[in-house]
Image 1 (tube, one colour):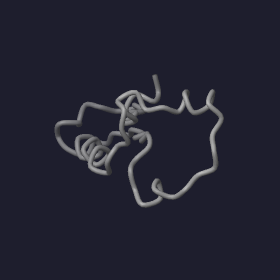
Image 2: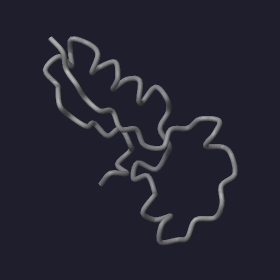
Image 3: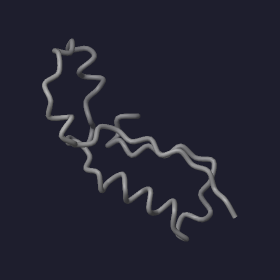
Image 4: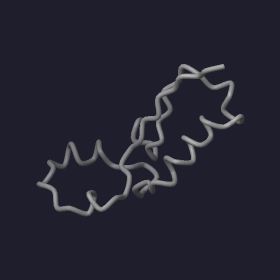
Length: 73
């Protein structure tokens, strides 16, 4: 049996997210806010990947799963 899914992560805290970025206009900045109020951690993404690769996810297929703290709302 094979399943095919797409894991779509949001902003994940890494050394690169600590780098300075150019200013973002307020209207765009508000649309880019993270509803849960914080950046994700690599383990947040890994947890969903493990679920999809395990027997617990064996009946999940043909899905795009957003692990983005609500940014896709």
